[in-house]
Amino acid sequence: QQQVKQSPQSLIVQKGGISIINCAYENTAFDYFPWYQQFPGKGPALLIAIRPDVSEKKEGRFTISFNKSAKQFSLHIMDSQPGDSATYFCAASLKGQGGKLIFGQGTELSVKP
Amino acid sequence: DAGVTQSPTHLIKTRGQQVTLRCSPISGHKSVSWYQQVLGQGPQFIFQYYEKEERGRGNFPDRFSARQFPNYSSELNVNALLLGDSALYLCASSLGGSSGANVLTFGAGSRLTVL
Image 1 (cartoon, each protein chain N blue to C red):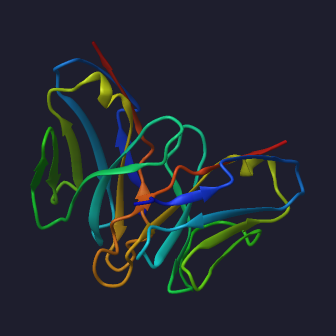
Image 2 (cartoon, each protein chain N blue to C red):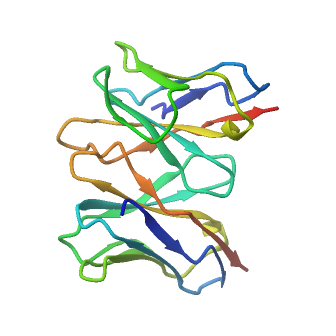
Image 3 (cartoon, rainbow over the protein chains, first blue to last red):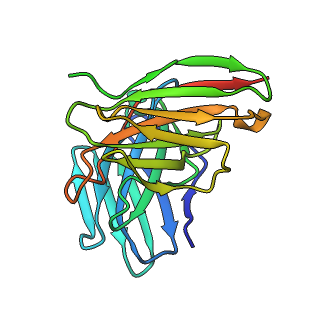
């Protein structure tokens, strides 16, 4: 019940295309859902985050869509660029346990020029 | 401004040895969390410390221990190393408390190889 399941494991998108990564969770007590971007040799960096009282959040080319009833959330990267090639992780945490993120398995995104 | 700094960046140990990893949080951040990231997987939570007190512990054996110092820096210790402890160990800091607690900033990690 504490798992966050992420798909796909890898994704190849053409430059200018839309990248979509999906995550599903079981625990309805989760109240914070961030997405992290990780480049090789670096630590994860916060990209965008959402709370369950909002169905969508957009920051630049990055959008989180959140479906509370389906217990799913997704990351959309519009106008994907080669510089977006990285590993993306969704995560979730319980209220009051912000230091304890439960991560998905990761999606390796490759954007072809 | 300096981000989260971790040391050492890389280290090689043999089975049975002990290792200490260090982390300096962002200035003003009082909470430090430790994660283990095995190659090809997402980070797994090990510990969280806030104001020098343990606030959470993940599903790791007692060979793993940590502490936080008065200046909010932290150490992660792993005893009796096993081959399976080979991983990237990540430290993340946050403001902690009731606000901003969820915004974790990660360091670049310490890459541990156990032979």
